[in-house]
Amino acid sequence: MVRISIPQGILTGGEVKTDSGFEYYEFLGVPYAKPPIGELRFKIPQPPETWEDERDAATAKKNNVATQFDIKTCNIIGSEDCLYLNVYTPKSLLDNTLPVMVYIHGGSFSSGNGIIKSEIGPDYLVENNVVLVTINYRLGIFGFLSLDIPEVAGNMGLKDIVKALEWVNINIGYFNGDSNNVTVFGNDAGAACIEYLLWSTTTKQLFHKAILQSGSILNSWSLNRKPMELLQMLLKNLNYEGDINKKREIYDYLMSLSTKELILANTKAFPDEDSKKLSFGFVPIIENNYNNNESFLTGDPIKMIKEGKFNRIPLIKGFCSKEASLRNMLGNNSVKDLSETKMFNEYVPNNFNDEKCNDIIRKVYFDNDLEHDYEKAIDFLSDLDFISGIWISAKLMAKFGVPLHVYEFSYVGDINMSQIFKLNVNGAGHCDDRSYIFSSQINKLVGFNESDKIMIQIMTEFWTNFAKYSKPLSTSDLSISWPLFSEESPAYLSINKKLEIKFDYETEKMTIFQDIFKK
Image 1 (tube, one colour):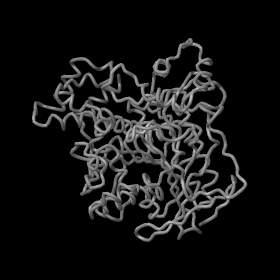
Image 2 (cartoon, rainbow, N blue to C red; image 1 turned 60 degrees about the horizontal axis):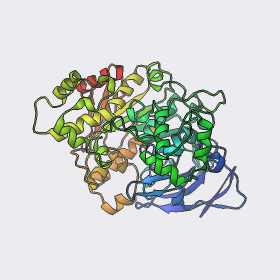
Image 3 (spheres, one colour; image 1 turned 90 degrees about the vertical axis):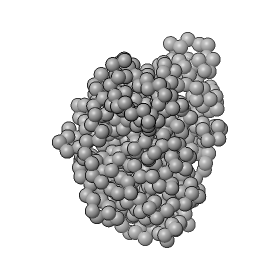
Image 4 (cartoon, rainbow, N blue to C red; image 1 turned 45 degrees about the vertical axis):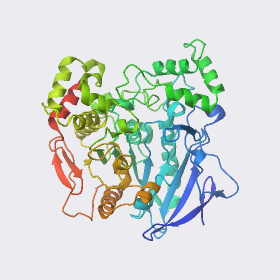
């Protein structure tokens, strides 16, 4: 047991030893805000409460993950009382101030958590002498509903993340962390959240570097431009009979419903205009400014990135080679359908989905090669859903001199989630890189080979050295120096069994998406 006193009260944490013998302290399920329950449902997060007795932080409660529908068990799990985080700090260096890494989990803004250690274990990272913080934030309807009124303005989940970063800024020194050297990192929706944080004036002093894995605000699934249409869909699922224009009556109605009723309605509230486009329902929106100092995002993020209105800090941005494995994971038949129909225009934005577009994409991706239809469909949907947005975002940021490193992760090992769950992709699937950054129960159950161990070492050295020095260095492979990405030299690191520097990712394919983006 180890005790730490912070302004909220005394925490009692645990002492842990990794498989390699490295020792660290852990403080689990620490509240960073007041529980957003009762009258605080849909509201901005409030400062955390204090406690008088010692608080047990040796375990995290599974019920304190954010309320969500678990697709693995088809059950509703978690609670609205979910604003908690974990802190891990090396034991051997307790007298030194260490770099801090704050992880923002992915899960399409509707699932995932930051407190269940068996899923996102700290061992690989803390062994490199950093302080690690992993956080929860509100998801789905509770995190991203908007009624376009001050009481439910939207983006509550993003505001939770800001509150967690404020907690880190105030408290991380008690855990031997350096509040002036904070790196945020995340995958999928977590990466998109980080990019949103870059545009916000409220976060400028709260973090100093960022790593964005498999997500960008330029991915169409990361922003809902029609929140009122989604609200109408939700109310229809709830059989609401009131006037849909009377927002405060709707607010009172939603406040009267149970967590379960809202989550079940949430699972059915997805834009049905075209099911072939990747969409996750309740996600970030552009808010109205109510002049109450509570707004997070009031400008168009695409316009802001073009104008350079963002915090220009050192960044790593990257993607996995076969991101479209996510569609297979979600039980989506679109990969198979596209490989058979080759109707690409059904998947792209409506203002670009004519027959001419279809001919261009078919020529670039298939080029009369009819033997690898499935692989070509995977490549196109990977580019459409993830890679093009990440790449174009990198190019736009590079125009403004951002210190930026870009990577493609294509390594296939025994602990790739796409391999474990047999997602039928020939390469690294969506967020497969995460398996080599976080320890987990699945990693231990599956076991990993010597090549996987080397990849864990390479990835964690890149990530933690970036947190320490603003440069992704690896002592495991001294033959490679990861160059900066720039407009003139769009270099990226290909991470596979062999590390390799490449330039200008898939130029002809990315040109198609740049044209789509311009429209």
